[in-house]
Length: 245
Image 1 (tube, rainbow, N blue to C red):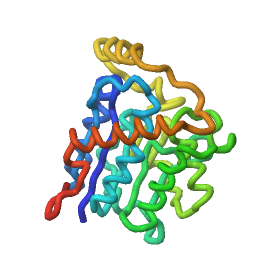
Image 2: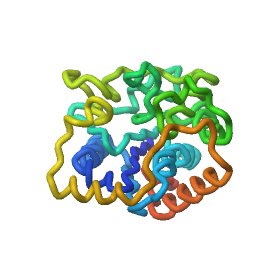
Image 3: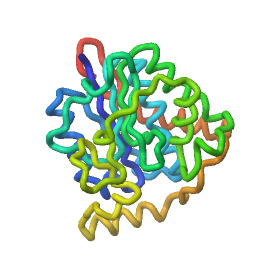
Image 4: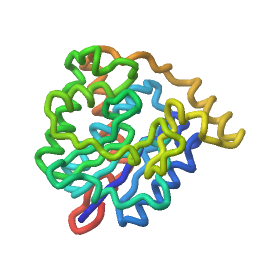
């Protein structure tokens, strides 16, 4: 079964979380999956475009024919004993995410088994960009996660994964993927050079704000352009006939 694991690490995230991205690479090699870290262009002035990029790239990977696709945020570390993600989804589900500390789905780790249900779900998330997302779905969020929650509430069919697949809050958990966000962010250690480079990269981009109720058609067009650019730069995002990717 063909499989792809990918991340997006622009605006200094590839430097700041280089050990996490290395853990993705080792994991992909261990389970026999293609791996792509989208790090170019290195500067994406609108951080919302970079954050949203995972959605059209997931849609593309599924449409291109990968049997299984996993997205893992660049600031998430895959542990050496993590099992094959292809076995994590229940047989009657095609999409899975763990709950974040707010009790809602967290899109930092998204698993998909190809089929109509998975493709329809992520296509629907992308289409919802131009819709008004209710306050309760996007509360305390900045980017695409509110749309993911909104569509999951509408459509259902998303498996709630074991929290070990995306641990966002518990430093004592024997986890599979440790996501250095929220209360775990301060537990990640990087060297001084990487810290300085990360801060410099972040200083040149638009600072994140609360997720708006809706996005503009211009935002959607820019996102689609960014997705097409990534597909050109990283051919392994597309499954090639007769190969892994």
